[in-house]
Length: 194
Image 1 (spheres, rainbow, N blue to C red):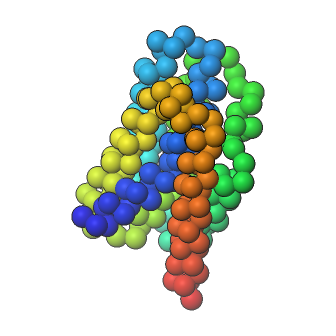
Image 2 (image 1 turned 180 degrees about the horizontal axis):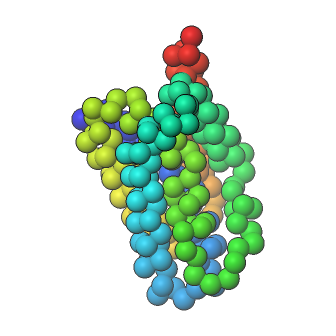
């Protein structure tokens, strides 16, 4: 139970729904507000499908590509660290400054905002670390996904409630927590390699 909750918290930090609120709102700006929730729900479900695909088939893909768990841990730590530093020192709105008009489909909301490289790396690492606990990892993914999905569905209200500065402060706090997780992944990968 503790491992599952720990994994769910890690995934929640990696998914960074608070940091994604302004990006989701910016991407959906030109679309009728009545369509926002259905779009967010659809994109979240697509992201969940991708996360589960990587959870269950990621270790096989690693073996096929001859990538060790230690290398993935080091690479995941580096990616997480870069994302965490970006979260701490400035907002990530610039990434999506120009986006195609019309309803977004898969890109950029489902991938890479929801199911991005760090989230996919994290779920692969969970399963690669202990495949026998697949039920715990599945529960962790579902729990983190559900919490993130709820936040994103209510993103307009959250934006009004916390304001731009409040959301930026929360993103920085999540970034600092994510930095420690990234360093831990990196150190574990290096330790296991030697």
